[in-house]
Image: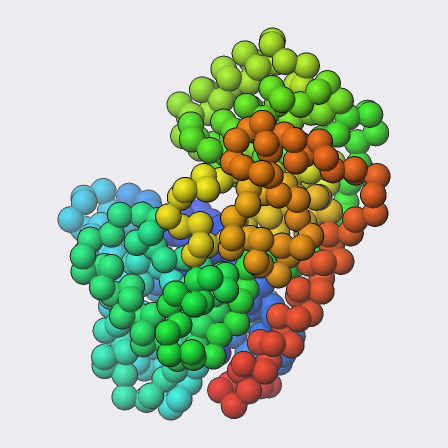
Length: 383
């Protein structure tokens, strides 16, 4: 089974190909799930290099048991026009590759991404092998980022042309799957992280915000939440962002620590095992989003699953997509998206009560694999 997406691996990080690590994490989980069903996987990536020089070849190699990665050739350019041409070439390569290397009625899984709209639609137009499209829709992009009229039309065209769906929320599924094609909800990665760190035994309750650092909701809200928490709580912030936003966060933290008994610490960007170890030393993860944001009903905050996979309880603002999700019954919700109400929800948690979020994620994993197998029956060939 082919998976079309922008993707890369650590081995070739020096090529600086365009891809999102968060996307790659979900793709890895889907590929692993297919492998457990004895379905061979080929990840086909048209990701071009970000570099301004260098020639990087097309390659196709096994990257894990049952998983092959095929990448397009890409050259780095300083010239803006040549960079645009390079992008076009990579998209056209994808169309040619799929035309040449698919078989009759083959099922292709594609990640939803505005930069893939054109090659996917061109391929569907030229395809004579009656391939089927399993479309992974994580959100409706035009509700999240500005898209021109043509891109908006393409997004809905792909929703209409998809033969089956993986969707991030049931609310999104109802929006885009008007013809009731086969669909399956996948909130993100249902992979449990083994315990590699002991909890802190300093008498504090450790509250974590992990995510983008900016001046709106999120990291700035975490700072404000600390002003409503007593001394027995400690707020931790990790994540990435623009340098000016990080600098502003550090100033806000310093001011808060001077004036409030609950102290805050920012510990930068953490990845891999360091990220998991840091999370596992905390008790509560917070998901603070703007309740009025357009995209709330068509996307699922992936940080919630990351928190739970590492054993944390989660306090979230009361988003319908989250409350009605497969894990809604296991979360703690604030009365509003204000810092005071989120702090109240945090303080209402008894961290001594029995709670096993890893078990919940593990059950979701087993359910997904069983449902995925049922969805794919008759559409893919097992090893």
